[in-house]
Image (cartoon, rainbow, N blue to C red):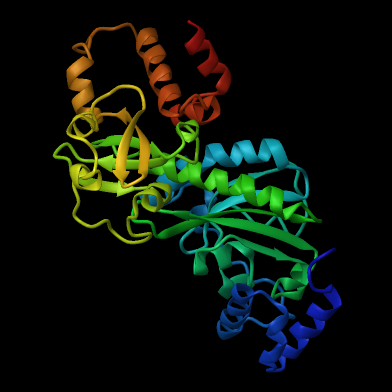
Length: 361
């Protein structure tokens, strides 16, 4: 297995570190050095077997609403990544802030002993299995790659894992998406795709807010409607509620933490009066001045859902036939899942075949 440092050197460094030689850590990237130190501080020994705790909730149902929401937002991206890169001997998953697996894609016949324990509901932190890519991403808010003997546990010498952090509505790390497997992959290629998947998942997370206007912003209008778009959540009174990490960078907002008390007019204070009047109005993307020599393209994506329903929805028909109700529920679920029919079917508790039939009727 090729890495920037010879695997035999890493084996020797691990043995020296187990004996108390901290100088041996210099062979590792700084985030991995910190992870090895945290693993040892937690009482994990390099030569031990991984200590997998029992599944929480038997892996059948996530107990916390925030975990369920994040899992719903990530699952479509995991499915697409699996379609591109999945294979026997590999697994893809999302871990929450505490390192517990909350969503996963894997081969149905996977039997590798090192991969079988990775299941929804399993805690995979440094205190249980030492240094892994998701553990590093969760601790340091960085993309992480851990290969071969860069793992703290000797048992994981055959393993490759790569991860990307996920951020919540306050810009704080709330999880990580990861690919783990036996063998070797192209890290540069995977990291690009996993970053795109993380951004798309975060965008979906922001759009779970229902009582806000959602605006897309980007310097280049070609990046609107892609994972690279900035997203803003704006209350009906014009108060800025949330912003994804792209929007925070584009608009000079704090990278992490709750946003300062700002109105959308204050964010775009240098825009013309005509541009500001259009900020919360539906329509095509339009150019908005940010400052001297700077502008973004902005598009209003969605009004607060409660207001939109009151404005355009007809009065409900109480006695609609059951089949009509089922068809309408199927259409709503497909729209909410942004065309991902597998996700829509799971949310409705029906098979994809049944969902197809309802949508074709």
